Image 1: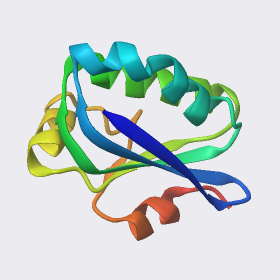
Image 2: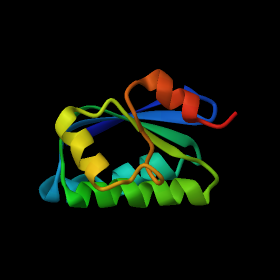
Image 3: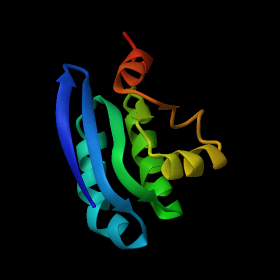
Length: 113
């Protein structure tokens, strides 16, 4: 599992996730991921196009990061999920907390302002 943060506007970052976000990898990326997503004080678009697998621990990591961003007045939007990852997110009914859209353009449209 790896991630890359790219500034896409003065108020938002895009975070590209690549690999598997599971019990093994969550422990390895939790602190740097949370710092990258939440500490910036920016909105975050999470690009899931390269995410092959998402476990319940991975969902917990995404939710906890989104909560920190929300406390700072921002939002997190997910986009580009592979079918298996999208199924997991939809089955968990997380749309209210973690909006999931198909494209980066749709994700950008969800950002305030």
